[in-house]
Length: 91
Image (cartoon, rainbow, N blue to C red; front, side, top):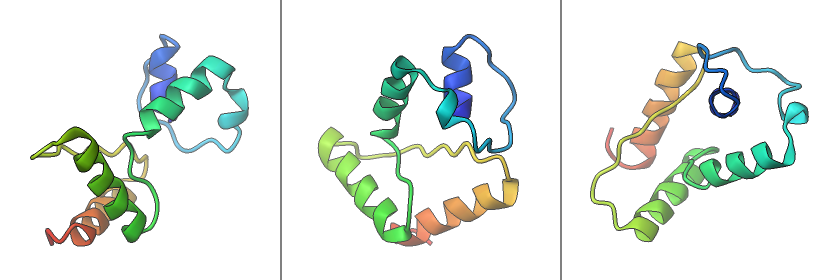
């Protein structure tokens, strides 16, 4: 969310560590933009991720997905991909 907001503000930068005060810094337009972007996101437990991906496929008719994960901590990013693969029956 931080990376997306920075890009929309015209301030692209490297992925930053999570900032607990970030959401409080958003204006209404930025909140609306993030809500729209997050509509295509799968965040949460393995079951929630699976439901989100299934819903996205049902909505779009996609037969292939490209996953991207903007997680600051590399090990956490790798773990997120592992969890997603397992939840979707790929691992």
